[in-house]
Length: 488
Image 1 (tube, helix red, strand yellow):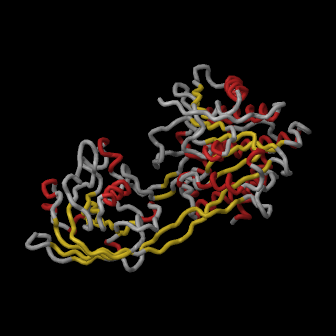
Image 2 (cartoon, rainbow, N blue to C red):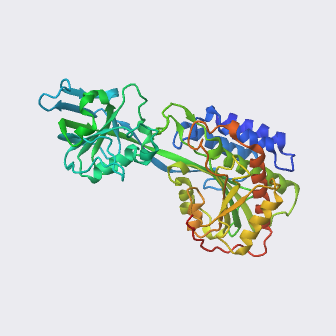
Image 3 (cartoon, rainbow, N blue to C red):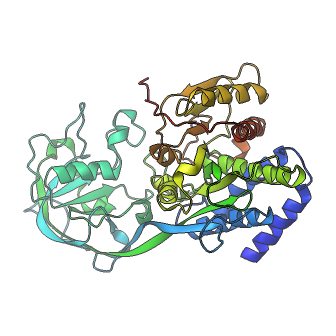
């Protein structure tokens, strides 16, 4: 399979290697290809992510770029996270109190019961207290005057008004409710979902090996609905015995990267980066429950496409124009994995880089650059993370890139943000984080290729091309300076 991917990439490269300019059709191809269903949403640690990483590595190889990692490899493998699957010892035994019409004792195992890996497995037996929606906020407090210590909480899914009630939206996720329950000293929690509704997926939760309340999910038909009402919050409905067990698998992530030309010690490096991972298939989401593929065309097939096209362009320039880049300088094209799980790939790279961090001139991060809207404009964070010349270069290249005259340039203060430039900034490297802003399809299945604005993507990619060339021509390297984030 990898040989086939390489041959396809080689054919594609040979088709366009004589093009001296950036190509919109290349950008369109890469975005549509990476955001197609065949890549399954590119979730880190899955076979779909491995397929994506192999495609990226094969593309760099077809472009005759140079592998930067130990063993002459294009891929850097790292420990990503643990994946939990339910063990055979997961069970719930329920015994109602007195004459409550909750039918009979119940014993649940298998598909009727889903354990949540918020704590390592174990066994607990205790009284079970109905806790409504387990919400604690200014508008509603289900924990008021209820002693949960040592007991098992019975907790309804979502909140009053269902999943679309914006008032309680940030209080609805399971992990938020679980933390409230843990703070109250509970021994366990039974989350109740609605019958015939889509259930959450165990793989959506990052497991913890810490001690804490045991947690399971089952249908609300375990109980008589008469008793799952507000007036019964704080009442003991019965006795429960919870048992959870998990099997754990260590998942691997893969950063993919390539140098423009052979690296030698002491070279000054420009880093052009973008994360390629997204959130995959059947991701649990409190607003949408349909089992669809989250293709992530904007987030971040768009940035990945720009990095690949810039790699093609600069390699062609290097082959056609001798000495356009000094021997003392190099460009590293890198695609990060694990961004959606907390910048894991970029942190791994800066911590384990085989070349000195201080030799990096700047890090340009392209994340969600496919939805340029002139009125909203282009956002760039990091113009103030170096001496004044950095801001001047960014502004100059923006004006040269051919954006429509009414396109705004929004320079964002600070150097820390929710993307892969953050680890570099914390290592005192000047950064520039390009993005075109959040939209209603963010982290939803609707983030597809059809909504990408190729003309805007091309203009941003062209601006980055100009910016890289300007930095390479500087007589004095950029000097890092901290940039404070202004409150807005």
